[in-house]
Amino acid sequence: MERELGRGGMGIVYLAVQETLGRKVAVKTLPMAGEPDSAAAERFFQEARVVAKLQHENIVQVFGMGQEAGWLYYAMEYVEGESLRDRLARGELPPRDAAGIARDVARALGHAHAAGVVHRDIKP
Image 1 (cartoon, rainbow, N blue to C red):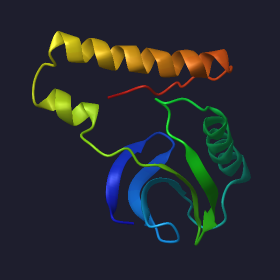
Image 2: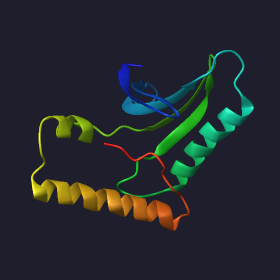
Image 3: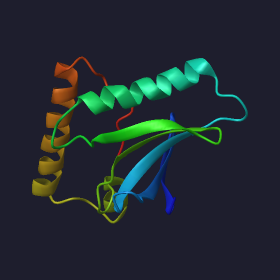
Image 4: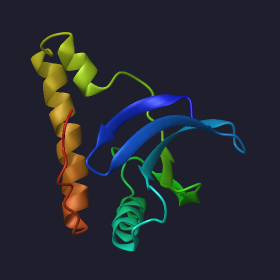
């Protein structure tokens, strides 16, 4: 793991390198103290399975999932660049840029909703 990228209600995301393929990946983890709670583990892995089924240009791909040393994880596509949160911290977006981001997010959410998936945690 190279560094932490962010935290959410369902775990911590790190930047890592998938050594076998030499590519950067984002690894979402759910640290477990001791033996993993089976209900929490199932929810976590279900999230990975749901995202893996969504094939869309604005939704990251899931590459794999597993458990290692008391941590549950799944590896997904890493998107290089500045986060929206960091960009907004620098000031207002030009209207054209804001509209483009809103369009891309709406397309991704529309694709997910058409597949019966509700995100429940949208944030910059």
